[in-house]
Image (cartoon, helix red, strand yellow):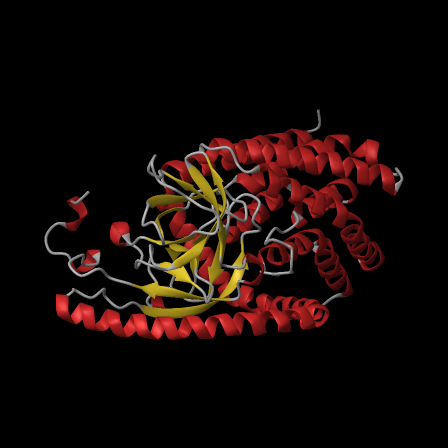
Length: 171
Length: 281
């Protein structure tokens, strides 16, 4: 293989990082962790990933990719088919239009913005779920999920940051 | 506006439209999406199984740490429970013996025996919007839609989709779960409804029914789907016209479950029915 081709292949590989992290998190989400007191509620991991990559590398995370990954999550988790990609696409659309505001801001500001986004996504999911099932969904598990998601965001961001750094260094 | 932005906007609207269409299809024609789900879970079952093993390891480690701190109290509790259970064992032996004799005298038609297929829980829905789990046993092992799923504690839920090597279990706490039950002591019938929380609710109880906290709730067997008498939980709170049921199943520790293959005599499974089965309601 010519060096140019190797370089191109290398670039493709590293540019797959955002999609790969989300795919990995889809599996992490559906795996039964069974932590005591966890109550079988899992944080919205892929929402964190879509949030992070939409702000920092929107060029490597297309709407089509988010649609496909969200659909896979719905198929595996037994959610109403289309609910996750709908919420994720709307989050991604809003973030891409607002990313200029968030770029270069302190981590605290970004975290607070994530809290608003997570809350908005949960409310949207609640409304969509309630319309889909024709009965109001219990709000408590959803609130628990939002709190868990917001609290775990810094840890996940650290991991995304490492992956992002590797992308910039080797890509 | 540059062409690229225009294309992106168009793609966005198209994809959002696609998600809404998918949801409508899923709602109106669930059979169509079920096939897709079954294929997706069958393909990913080996991957999920691979991932679920270390997860189970972490879970059991966390459990071990928890047990370490409570070992003394638990031991004391178990000793007391053991004493109580030994007394119950004597009562049960006597009752069983008496039961056999009385059944013989009355020529009672015995309930059909259920056979079990056990599987490991390989995926969990996450719990906030739906409460289902995937197990690594499917139609190839004899699992079919509608079968009851139990574990050592009691009823867990029922099979809603069965692929060739994986199946989805709708937990009894899911919003869509409806199970005919009976209050063990008073024999009052009710329907157990899930609401996506950790508990379930009793509905359609008789107006005159008397319900008390601590009453055991078991499956009634009405409808012929579940064998009668599977323990579900205890009434933890009495409300107007119903009650809250605390299930025996521990949702944090759902690792292995058994699927009950139960066929009521006279109700043949559909492929064995004679005539134009498709035309039947």
